[in-house]
Every structure is written in C-alpha cells, then in structure tokens.
Amino acid sequence: MNRRARYVEQIRANGAPLTDELAAAFATVPREAFVTAGFQRPGGGWVSPGDRDFLDLVHRDDVLVTKVDGRTPVSSSSQPSLMAIMLDALDVRPGHRVLEIGAGTGYNAALLAALGATVVSVDAQEDVAARAAAALDGLGVAGVQVQTGDGYAGAPGHRFDRVIVTVGVAGLSPRWLNQLDPGGLAVVPVEHAGTHPVLAVRGAAAGPVTADVICPSGFMSASGPLTAAHQFAHPSPAATGELGPLTPASGPRFDPPLGALAYRDLWYAAGVWHRRATHAAVPGVEHSCLVLLDDTRTGGAAIPPDGEVLTTGDRALAQDAGDILRRWDAEGRPPMREWRVTLALAGQPDAPIWVPANWSL
Image (cartoon, rainbow, N blue to C red):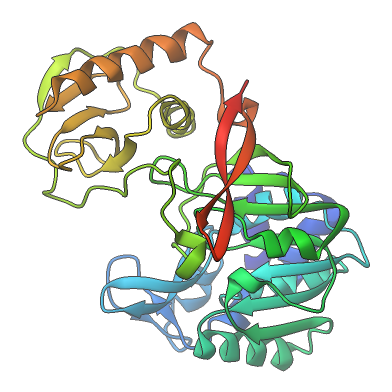
C-alpha cells in the first residue's frame, strides 16, 4: 500500500465516513503541495520539504500548523479526518457553489473542487490567502477564487448552495445565510463550553435558524464580530495556573473512565445545562478538563473523564457538577449528535451573529 492509500485508510480508521468520491479526493489532491513553506513539528521545531520525514508527517491524520504569532498558532491545515467529517456533512454535489470562510492552506478548497464544487474562499490574513491562491494555481485547480477580507461579510455579490467555516466562531453571520440559496446548508464550528463543536445549520438571515450537532472539534478562533461576546456565551478557557488548587468533592463515577468521544458528549451536555461550563488545565489530568468556572476564574469544579468532582472556591459549583453527572446518566448519556439547537440573534448591534440559545434531545 502506498503512502497516499495509507493516508486515506488513516482518515477512515479515525471515524470519517468516506464516500467513494471523498476518498478519491483525499487520494488525489496532494496535501504536500499546500505546505511548501513547512509546518510546526509536534515536538517543537519546523518541518521543511527537504526534511527526510516531511512526506510521512504530511500524510498523517494530524493538524499541520503553518503559521504562528509568537507561540500562538494562527493558520493551519486542519486534521484530515475532521475535514472529511465536515465535507461529508456538507453534502457537496458537482456544480454546487461553496463559500469557504478561512482559506488556510487552500487544501480544503482543493478537496471541494475535486468534488465538483466551485469555491469562493475568504481569509482575513493577506499572506495566508496569497499562499493558498499560489498553491491552488500551481496545481492548476480550477473553480476556486481566494479573497482577502473580513469573513463576517462573506462574499458580497455571490450566491451559494453551501457554506463551510474552518475557524472557530461564536456564531454565524446573517450575511452568510443571506448569500445562501433556499434549502442551503452551512457547516460551522460554533463555540460551546470552551470548544467548537461543528453544527449543520439551516435557516434564513432573518430566522428562524436551527442546527444539528455533527462532531467535536478544536479549531483556532476567528477574530472580529464572529467572536463577539453575547448573553449565551460560556467563559473562555482557564489558562494553566489560573484555577486554584483542587480537592476531591466526590469520588470517581465511571469505571473505566469515559473514552474521548463519550467525554466530549458529557462536556456538550454540561454546556447545555450550565452557562459556566468551559475547560482548564488540571494537574494530574492528561488533557484539558471540563470545568464549571466561577466569576473570579480562580474557583470552580472540574469533572475529569472518570467522573470525579474536584473543587476549589465556590462549593455550589461542585454540587452543580454532581447534578450534571446524575442528569447525564438519567438521560441515557446522550451523544452530542442527538442535540437539536435553536439559534438566536446576538452579538454586536451593528454586526449581529446567530448563536446557540436553546437545545432539545
């Protein structure tokens, strides 16, 4: 099996529902052509095309960070299995017109073109847009137009069948929905409890707007009105050391501990039921942990994957955490895909956004 075939099998093995058309797109569009300036090595340093392991690292089911501002990643090639899940949810057909918010490397737009779509891709960073356009032109990819601009505006003067967003946002711009033809669909990672679960959204610019939850994700956040604070928002994640020392409030509930997907399901439900749900680094927990964070951002209650409740500061939040665990069990531990979302208009008066406001199972 050659490198490209192994790459496609990795994507499939990690849960992406690959149609024949989507598998063919990943097998034929060369990801390496979109990261010719290199990318950040997982353990530190920079990978360049001349490095012996360059192609092996490119053809892994991993995010490739292609631009950093100090230590902060600001552009990347997304994890291929997540891209595949989102593209499958987008249900692109030959001839569809697609608005992409966040050009990144241009790789996602090339996959869309391989599926038969014509694409307008908008990125706020001029250098990122220029590199994406150069990579697409270099491969002779037809039907993709890359623009530099504010993603909130979409692509004025164009009409679309689909919208896909490849950065984390607090909500959807009404302008995207206004540019969608009736019956159109938007696939968008929208903030929820400190992460960005992907939503499949339908509706008109004036409403009503509804969504189904597709999958968890960890996209970089956008800027500007797309990340505006609003009355339905959760706290931003707590940085390392921000949360005070934690002590047990109740013992572990899950044996064995929840796996990664089930833990994300619990996390999603916690965000539905509690406005203080977000995440923080917690000593002794390998990955970032679900927490209910108090107003001071130094106290709260953490729920690691084993269902233990750890607390510091506001003890009422420890009680809330226990209630969330009991309620999630009582509801049958619903996966996030079972939630249906109704969105409300919020954000800045001169640049409103549609944000999740009500949920049902």
